[in-house]
Amino acid sequence: MKIKKVVLAYSGGLDTSVAIKWLKDTYGCEVIAFCADLGQDEDLKAVKQKALNTGASKVYTIDLKEEFVRDYIFPMLRANAVYEGTYLMGTSIARPLIAKKQIEIAKKEKADAVAHGATGKGNDQVRFELAYYALKPDIKVIAPWREWEFNSRQSLIEYAKTHSIPVPVTKQKPYSTDRNLFHISYEGGILENPWAEPPEDMYTLTVSPEKAPSKPVYSEIGYKDGNPVSLDGKNLSPASLLKKLNSTGGRHGIGRLDIVENRYVGIKSRGVYETPGGTILHIARRAVESITMDRELMHLRDSLIPKYSELIYYGYWFSPERKALQEFIDKSQKGVTGTVRVKLFKGHCSVTGRKSPQSLYNPQLATFEAETVYNQKDAEGFIKLNALRLKLQKLNK
Image 1 (spheres, rainbow, N blue to C red):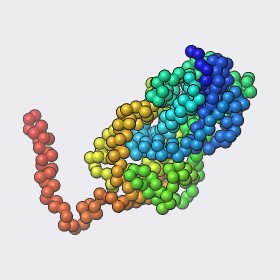
Image 2 (cartoon, one colour; image 1 turned 90 degrees about the horizontal axis):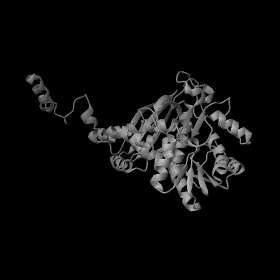
Image 3 (spheres, rainbow, N blue to C red; image 1 turned 180 degrees about the vertical axis):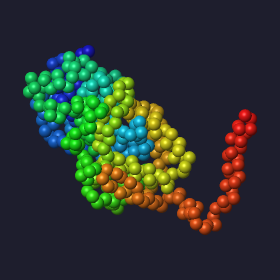
Image 4 (tube, rainbow, N blue to C red; image 1 turned 90 degrees about the vertical axis):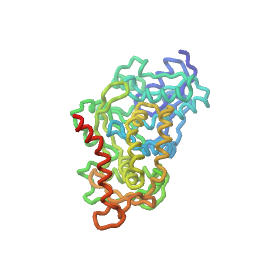
């Protein structure tokens, strides 16, 4: 495959740092690096300089934080998406946006190929490449991990040392991380033993629940049509709101997760995650929905959560089925407006109040005290009609 110019999704980490030199040596091509600012809290000027020092002809660094939260995280949260009942998919949801911007740069620079640093064993290769092909069907894709001679991260470290490429992975911290405004993930190395407890000094965004403050903190999150718009009475942009919740949640040990998940390629993988703000928003959303959504509409939406979550986890963000599901989900969120009060305390986020101007909760109907709006005798016929098929089944036996 002849390549003249390639746009590489660049993080400054081990894999993509090695990839710049490898791409140039293997294909004799020009390499343009693209680093998306998704709130990973890195010195992007240093990352840019590192890419240039390693051999990139040009480096794009683009601030995508607001777009990331508004157009990717919030739609996912509106669906209450959780993969396999636990994972909030902080890595999964970042890939389609990175791929989208990468393709835009490829078009602008008239590049004939794009590349990424995902391994041939993981999910990210699928997520990146499905997005590439959906957005530019004729693009050429280079996945170095599926081609080069290196067979481990240790061999990459040795190669990097030989060629004076600085890398963040060391024997003292033998695991890889991926961070953005929604979460940070840890995998590989010492975490590959699913019985081994993660070391406490590994965690970045959260304190341990044991060391969290002994006094709880309360926060009020305002929602409009399914999206969080305010925190403690102050309107904030999507990225600002999430960043502030990350800080508050992290101080109280909210959002740690240690799981073994099923990758799309068929491999079980152990991952450790910190998602403080996302965890709070997920819990708060269910609370405002509980008083504003029609029961059957909510149950129908909930039945779609596993499929919608799979589509994101597997990399089908730009698929027609994900877009169709999103339209239904977003329509179901009209009227999901109100305020939720949460209590954060030593790793736990609990709902302590919810209110809405469009609430379907009727105190007169719900009360166990005397009221005049509900005739309890009506329930007798309701029960008998619903019991009819059960009675017939038993009689026929």
